[in-house]
Amino acid sequence: MATLLRSKLSNVATSVSNKSQAKVSGVFARMGFQAATDEEAVGFAHCDDLDFEHRQGLQMDILKTEGEPCGEEGTEPPVEGDIHYQRGDGAPLPPSASKDQAVGAGGEFGGHDKPKITAWEAGWNVTNAIQGMFVLGLPYAILHGGYLGLFLIIFAAVVCCYTGKILIACLYEENEDGEVVRVRDSYVAIANACCAPRFPTLGGRVVNVAQIIELVMTCILYVVVSGNLMYNSFPGLPVSQKSWSIIATAVLLPCAFLKNLKAVSKFSLLCTLAHFVINILVIAYCLSRARDWAWEKVKFYIDVKKFPISIGIIVFSYTSQIFLPSLEGNMHHPSEFHCMMNWTHIAACVLKGLFALVAYLTWADETKEVITDNLPGSIRAVVNIFLVAKALLSYPLPFFAAVEVLEKSLFQEGSRAFFPACYGGDGRLKSWGLTLRCALVVFTLLMAIYVPHFALLMGLTGSLTGAGLCFLLPSLFHLRLLWRKLLWHQVFFDVAIFVIGGICSVSGFVHSLEGLIEAYRTNAED
Figure (cartoon, rainbow, N blue to C red):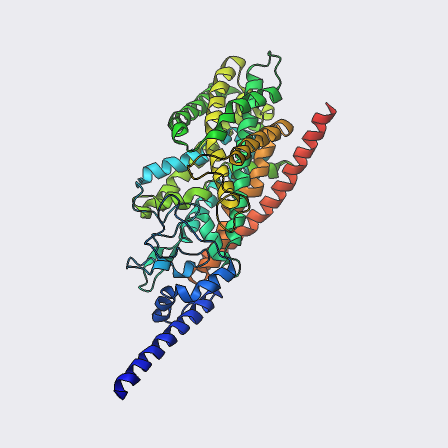
C-alpha cells in the first residue's frame, strides 16, 4: 500500500514538474530562446491552459481562418508571434501549433482545399503585376536618365527578382528532422516573425500601412491616367482634365458596393491582352519612324534633380513582392518558383527596355509623362480609349484589396478592433462600411484633381513604398531570420541592396515631393 501511494505521488510530482518546465520554456522562447529539448516544446504545446493568462497579458492577436472553422472544438488558434511553434514536419501537430490552422493576411499555408496553379499561371500573374499600364511612364524615365535609365531597368529587374526569392526563403525553416518546411504564409507573417517576441504585431502593421499606401496610390494613378488620356484624346471638347477625372470617378463609384471581384475578374484577361496589343501598336509606330530616331539625344549624363524621380518610376513598375507569398503557396510545384521568377523578370526587363528606348528615340525631348499622348491624333484617341477602359477595369483590384486591409485592421470584430465590424450577422454591408468605401473613392478623386501628375505620383509611390517593399524589407528580413545560414556573398548582397535601396528611396521621395510642390505652385499661378 505504501509503495502504491509513493508511486502515485511520484507520478503527480513528475506531471506538475513537466508542466512547470514547459511553461518556463515557453516564456523563455517568447523572449527569443528556443526550447532546450523536444519534450519541453511538446509539453508547452499541450499546456495552453496554464499559458492562457500569459497570452492575455501580452494582448497578442489571434489568427483566424476567414470563413472556415479554426480547428477542432476546444482548440485554440495560433497567436501572432508564436511562429517558433508552428512546426510543419508533416506529423500530427499539437492543437496550438497546427500549420493547417495558421492563417494570415495572405492566405493559408498553401491550403489543400484551394485549387493549385501551375508555374505558367503563376508567371502570368506576376507578368500582369510588372507589365501593367505603368510601363507607359518608362520613356519619361529615359528622358531624365538616358543610358543610366536603361541600366536601371535591368538592375531593378535583377534586384526585384532576387528580393522576391529571398522573401519566399523567409517563409521556410528547418524542423527537428532537418527538413525545410513552410512555417509562414504571408509578408505580414514574415514581418511579425522578425519583430517577435518583443513586438509580435509591429512588423505586420508596418507592412499593412505600406501596402495600403501603395494600393491607394495605385487607385489614384488610375484616375489620373484616365483623366489625362481622355483630355489629350479629345482636346477640342470644352472638358478639362479634372472634369474627365470626375467622370471617371462617377463610373468607378459602384466599386464601393463590391463584395468580391468575381464579376471584374472576367475582364482581367481581356484587359491584359488588350494592353499587350496597345504596347505592340506603339512599338510598331515607333519602328515605322526608325529613320528619324534621335540616338544623339540619349544622354550619358543625368538630370540630378529629376533622375531620382525616374528611379521611383522604374521601381514602381516592378512591384509584385506583396502577393508573392500567397502565389508561391498556391503553386502546384513550389520548387518551380525560382525558375518562374527568372523568366518573368527577364521578359519584363527586355520588353520594358525595348519599349522605353524605342519610344524615347521616336520623340526624344518631346516625350510626355504618358507616352501615348505623343501619338498622332488619329491613333491616339483609339489607343487612349482602350487604355482608359483598362484603367477603369483595373481600378477595382487595388481598391478592393485596400478596403480588405482597412477592414481587417480597423473594423474586425474582437477586443483589438478600433471600430465596429463593417458587416452584419447576415453578411450585409453596414452603413459605416459603405461610407468608408465611398470615402476612399472620393479621396482618390480629390488626389487626382489636386495632383494630376502621373509621372511624379508614380515616382513618389515607387520611392516611398515600392523601394521599401521590394528592396529594404526583404533584405532586412532575410538577414534577420536566416542570418546564421547565410554565406558571406548573400550577406553582402543583402546589405548592398538595403543601402542602395535606402539611398534611392530617400532621394527619390524628396525630389518627387519637390517636383509635386513645384508643379502645384505652377498650376496655382496659371
